[in-house]
Image (tube, rainbow, N blue to C red; front, side):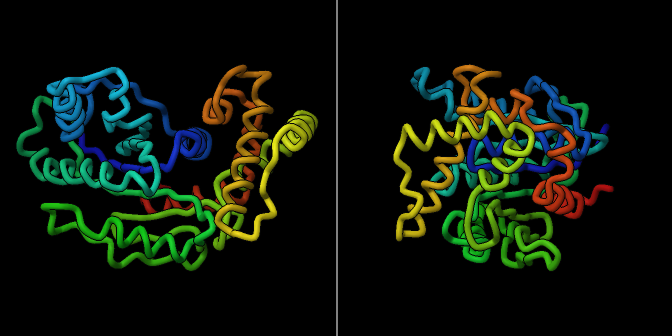
Length: 290
């Protein structure tokens, strides 16, 4: 039976997932996988099926479909399997912890009771991705350790020894768990601070026009005296510029679709980006891949 090393990645939003997908596709040569539940390695084959059945057993309405906490996309290469989840940010901690609770409960049983699977997860790692926002990496690492210090009914889970990497202050590792922060620097910012310069480099004219339109059409409180509001407004404005610039290729689409499908950033620009390289090096170290 094939043995699989799984990485569960929890992203704050759909545009984070779109960005991380590009990293695995272009920088690490992973392939996107379209599995049916029964095709996943144990214990995912049972976990996802049970999740849907649990909700379907209730009086289900259409607007509850988003409550199936399933991966948004799955990527594989050799023995590695990467599952990208939209965790919804810090306000949705409980649903992440619930998923982890059931996964950790089933993981030791996978090799004994594989439930018809042709592959089993023999090693699992967990990565949490957040924007620095107005808090900064140090404060966020502390909060992540606190938020995920305990997973109910699993005495083996620990997030205590989270160590910031000496050569990359955006990343921190605690054994099989890790956290990574997006930002203009380690003190503040968001993923948009990384994304927009790449769009500006490859689509200078359209980004300039989009920026002019966004600035003239809407009011952005980017000079607020409150750091939290200032960072949030800068992020919102940059999201709007990227989304506006992508409408010619993907009309009516959201920012995550623009990032994922509009092809406005050249592959070489993406690969050569300093922030992308830092994240790729971090992933290689954490996942122990060449």
